[in-house]
Amino acid sequence: MTTYRTRMGDGHAIEMTDDELRADFVRGSEDAADRGKIPPLGSDEYDHLFDLFSNPARVVGVACGNEVVLTHDIGTLRLDGDQGNSGVGIPLSRVQGIQVHERAFAADTMELGHVDYSYKPIKPVIAQEQQTLENTLLSTIIPIFYGAMPNLGTYYSPDGPFGNPSDLLPMGKIKEAREAQQEAVEHATRDMVYVATKLADVGGDGINFDTTGAAGDADFKATLEAVARLKATTDLAIQVGMAGEFVLGIHGGLEYAGTRLAGLYPHQQVKLAEKAGADIFGPVVNTNTSKSMAWNLSRAVTFVKACVEAADIPIHVNMGMGVGGSPVFETPPIDSVTRATVAMVEIAKVDGL
Amino acid sequence: MGGIRAAGDLVARMQLSQRMRIQEAKTHVANILKVGVDDLSDVTVMREVREDLDIGVITSVPGCAKGIEAKVRIADLLGVRINSVERLRRKIG
Image (cartoon, each protein chain N blue to C red):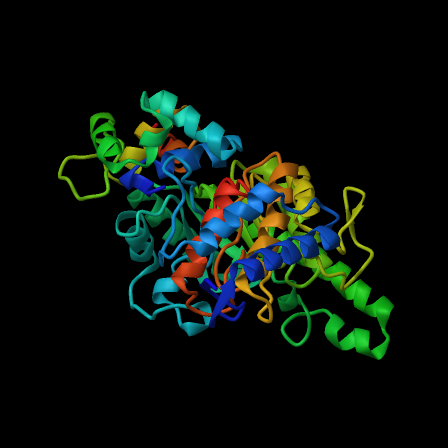
């Protein structure tokens, strides 16, 4: 019986038969369909996945003409940063790092980001960030985003001024936890608008809200409010990239434009991002380490395909360690990454990665 | 798509400034450059196009437009707003 080398969601290599692969494609897609109330993939799409998984080549690619553009997160920290950001610790400046991406890696776009990659800590060093962005914009050609995380967690104790919902909720202090989140939304929105406006003032191309929703529905709401204000007052291109496939209802009652935020999946998240004024949306689908990559990729493509079909703006799916049909491993295996990439482009029809 | 090695930066500019989906953005850029859509990722085609239009190339060629010089030409070529180019224009009056 012919078997094919593939991987589990944690990256370790396994062998699967034709029938096992096809069964996991169906199970993964139906899991997404059931959770998101969206259509599963069709038989042609399962065949396309099978072609990818049965291809013996280590690296696969899209057909000529199907190439898409790439945006980034984490800026140059992947070069000069530490292992916490998958960085490789090369001591070079951020401007140099961006030039390396443009001229050595042939990046389509790039991002400037601070080592403490959240909006709140950037506020006191914003002049430094403006200066570095100015130097970058003079010496580069590709579009340059500034990126950071909304990271509402930095507004809760012990790091911030408001009570921590993770402490308050287990004590049954629901009202206090909700009030803390509502106050954090106001402060985070104000900080994000302040930082982004300063970067717009010096000529930045765009702003990237990375890992939006990481602290739940309040995190998503703060970002949407900031996007709306920035769209009304600046010429920045705005990218909203999510933290997970599902908006956690840590508050539970927050809404944006009349829609409750808790529990939204990518095809619903993108409509609110559009309404706020985002120009590019980055959906996330998480990887389950206990399932095969056949299950995980089919599931991820199902969610993202529905998001692409619902969207009126470009969709740049988050791909990499633990998301977008890639294994949860710090340096994801290239065989899995390239198969996931092709599936996202040719089945989900994303506009970018 | 290969960034300034090909036409990746130009297609990205249309997504950022006009919210164009990938096929629309590619077609738009290909029409402006007078090349085929498939040529946009072809370095052998795009190298010559970029040199002729002087919009920046990936290797270090003395005399070719660099950095903001190339972006001024790209803004005019694509007819899009590039914020750093607008700033430069304000600064030089």
